[in-house]
Image (cartoon, rainbow, N blue to C red):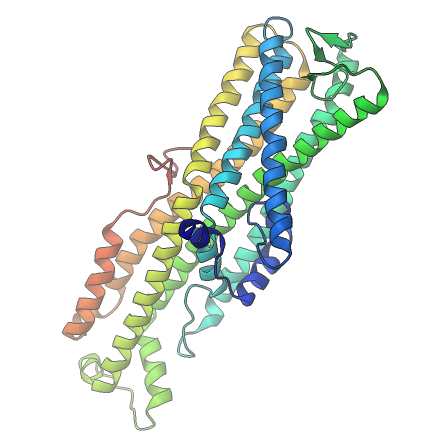
Length: 414
């Protein structure tokens, strides 16, 4: 019970909950990506999560049996069933993984809400405000892009496929082929006969519900991972900027705190001033704390996206292999090929963006190491130099997200 209490009764403040709602609206709750476990909503959220898993579990079994039945009669339908089964399986894995790591997600949201670290008035925030706004703009753009692609995939399955078959002259006239009902957007085996329109429309609604669950979960996972990785990279840029301007920050602190402080023209005299040295040390401590928060967020995001990214990469390979296999076997139907193409576009685009974020993370970590050489560290006191060395030692550890904990997510992967 203690493990369940730790993972699911997460101690988020009201401000953090409001932050989540502001950034993601109801997307996380609707997709059961991050359940709302407060008050009376806890029962609804748990029921929603179990219902999603039940719907997806039964659907995976049905699609798998459909694929087995159709592999020797309609290859295109079997391949399409395999694609859809892969997407549904990925959805189940992501849902279970994210809710299993709910405590890590909660801590990550808390870090995001705190904006990692808040510097005092000595820090010129005007220079970094565009970077923070960039996170919001990027999130909105990715939300629109992912939503558009997911809508296109759903439209292709429900509307586009039948129209393309009609135009191509490959419409399947039979109602049943080997117990697989063919008069639905996704032909499926059902353990009962569909003999009237009421049952047919109930099966159609079932497919629409499954499509909604799959697309909402996958879309939410993509949006969160892109948002999280981009946020960490922006914080690295802010940290580097603050280090490169550390002397000015220390001077600003001195001017605010000490009325009798005078600005030295001589560098050695300035760095020998005990007041300046004290404030310089304080600036270094602030940078250490900021760096610590960035590393905390990085470590949690690495855990959260580890298996979803691994499954995503594996699924891309499967989609490409199935599409090529269909072409080799002489499959001429446009509908399943276009469906595979749209899936591939979505998966590849997300993978490329995350790989770029992973590469940027490594590059920014290296730049952070070098940024101290742009300061006048030679004139600093022994204590300050020791603090600088501590941060540089941390920077020597190569930062990169890992798919499955094995494969580096960077340009080498893409």
